[in-house]
Length: 387
Image 1 (cartoon, rainbow, N blue to C red):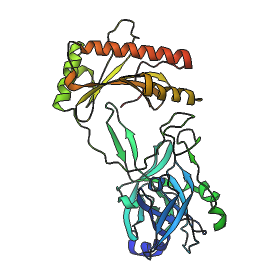
Image 2 (cartoon, rainbow, N blue to C red):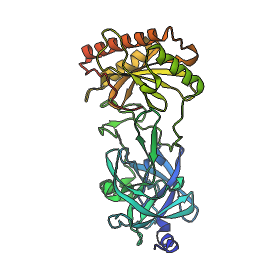
Image 3 (tube, rainbow, N blue to C red):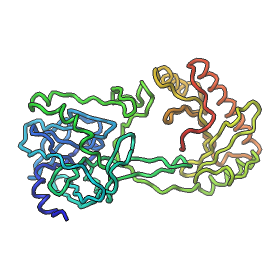
Image 4 (cartoon, rainbow, N blue to C red):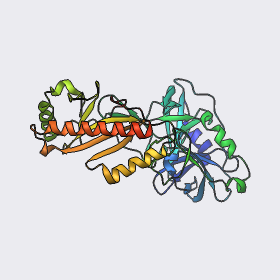
């Protein structure tokens, strides 16, 4: 069993607290020049942060390298510090006992854990998973073996989509990025302090690695929504629609001759193929409710996004939403463009709701045809993602 007190005394001077304008967490010294490794979730896109040291003092540091996809940021104190760097440990093995050491500001935190999995793939990268959900201040902390060697970095929780409802998802915590995944980045920042301090971080799209500016909301190359808000979110259990929303859904589906229970694919999602003239076979519409049940939402895929030269389409979508789409909204989810419209629950009328669906379907067909003609995009009739 790992002696936590001895381990804390040995590695404590190398573990720091990290304070940014938007978050708090931990990090550790990885190189002789004082370079600190932490989670990008902590620093976001801020260039300057504060490091909290073992003796209670704080020092200014700057971000010199960042990897959005891996959730790793490399920090360098503005003034050279005599922090002893931690060395790499052995490859983690299933069931091994490990320790997580971080800091809540300057106060040390150390927790015993075990390796629950050594190869969990999240967002295209392999992660080690622990059997505990660490303290929020431990984000960015090193995970250590019995000898104080670093096995990896504690990174942000990953959101995993589950089937059925657009709000049905879960957060997986206790994830560790193995040190082998970011060793190359460390080598790029291994040099004289004054030289490394001149480096400026570049932010690459987590999907296609195209460099983007933090002011953008989507990658102009592939259209991926960029992770601007590096915050930890609290997972709320899936909720059922309110009574008002539930009655509105029942009335809406009944007006189309669709049994509510047969169309339900999630706690707050119903999926059906409208029986409308000239409607494509297999075309799907999703009917959902908002959290309060105040609105029903009709949604359907329109076209598949192109794999390159996304910028003209993206700018066209923004123009449509700003100027010409009226009550209809266009959005991008994963690799598809979706059309949606909100219908107040209190305004759902069984006599007129089929007309709402018919108008939505005709608008959907119009957009599919337009995008196919002008941009050569592949039309989509069935959902490829779950909301």
